[in-house]
Image (cartoon, rainbow, N blue to C red; front, side):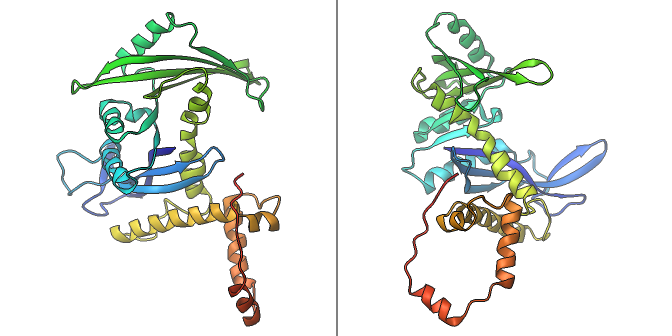
Length: 316
């Protein structure tokens, strides 16, 4: 499962380079550099960077600015070139729900689960609601084992025909989940989730597609971007104004985050800290202090160099 999403990286009050994107609000212009990331996500909460695509203008005065959609199409081509035989399911925000994305996934043999907003793809929405009444068997009620007071009500419709703006035909399915859980203020509250997919949905896979697929998209925000911004990695800090150096820093940050996750869930670390160390920032501080204060003799280093050690991966 690979989720693709964009985030802000650098923001300036003045033009930083010819590739800056611009946004004007109340007469004030902001110059900024967003980034688009493809990250591998797992049910255990691990998020690993796979590919990065910069969102930047080709020149200082372009006829149209670069955007997440254009960057996503470029990134998809690179993703297929880099991993030509990897079976991929894309988890995407509602921004990408449209014919170009459906066409790319069909061409490359990928599956997708894309958030379907209530105001998006009106013909698909109409057919979903029309066919829902004709297929009462496409329904499943589920009580999560770890949330005994939560109820998930699933409905789905397969084989919905959709013709995009370029007159390309697509066949899609729609999954809707109404999740009702206790609320301290109102007693019970219901949240609506809806996805569009090219998977054939039935009662045996709807839980896997929704709970272990579509809803994992948020991990790129929580375990990915938020950790890199608030967990000590300083993603949005301008360490340099040089455009190439800024990209190098970003890629090194992705490597650091990947290594930190592998360390945290490696068997040696779990043995030393069975209860963990708390946040990602705490892990970084402990590692830094170990480098500052640990003293190893030459004999100890030679012993380790000649000792075979296996570090097993222990996901949370």
